[in-house]
Length: 409
Ligand SMILES: Cc1ncc(COP(=O)(O)O)c(C=O)c1O
View (cartoon, rainbow, N blue to C red):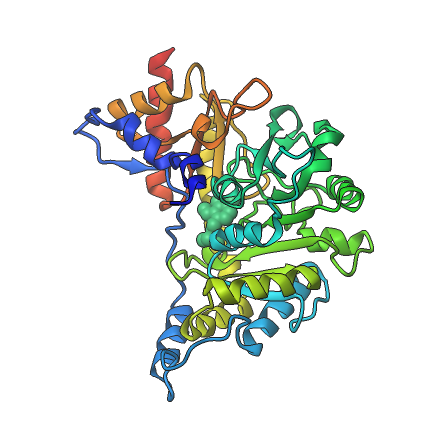
């Protein structure tokens, strides 16, 4: 067996199952889960239809092996979307690839980029730097690539921005990959241009690749100058004159944008030299996208109306739920994403367990989404609430949480 498998940590939901084992939730209340970040809004009918048509056409979309690089029409749809969304020009032939969800893409990109033999002083593993709290795949991908994660705490005093400036130069010197998540999970924070500039300069100095996880980019709450569509990594690069997107790969997904988490569809784009190696890796890994999924994805990327409608649903939901919770918890509307990241009194695991027992509402303890690093766990004392269910259910959950918090004080 691969000994690196023993380094993997239990997934947060596995830990949650253990936390709740033996607890009987209040039977008088129906269960509501704000735990899993799985979109629950309806999948648009035209996406389903595109998939059905692709199966039914002659020859059927199931009748041939797909190319890892995807159909030209799909890559053209990526390029057009990037142009519309970020006003950037990227070459569909050399600068983008389809992926079967950003989760596998994050994993595979890490395997492609990391050179585990490049050890400094003969013994230290190379580093992958990522935010803390973070999406757990970053860590697992890093460990299985033979590297070591370096966690950078997000700072509640600076809108949860990870403290990149506090990372020692000796860490950057060992870094092969930096994973950025903007809008962040769980914080919802969007990274501003000034931080991108700092990270690009560090990447130039130390030669590491930046993987920019942007799967929440289309769920945001304001259209004014202070809010607006989140800045993308490639958009930031272009604004800073880095038109070749050197050492940058952005990962974008349909799961949240188009409510198709089961379709497993996204794309990566950026530095052509990395894309070339990534294509080589993926050809052997065997993760080409089904032609049927390609057809449905092409239709989804070409349409923006359903994304506007999806965003409107989240906006209305967050506008109703956030004030209810802000009365009792330290929580605010995030820049983007579909989570509320709230501070609670006392221990986050006790909070989650007691809330489940008394009010049958599931939330995720923040400490499960972060690691203890540099002396503290930046998720401790916080909970993540995924507002993915329909509005009435989320409002009901918020009312129960408010009652629960009042009953504890
Ligand atoms: C931060 C982050 N990145 C990536 C993903 C993976 O999304 P998908 O594989 O559906 O594109 C998720 C899913 O929840 C996520 O929260």
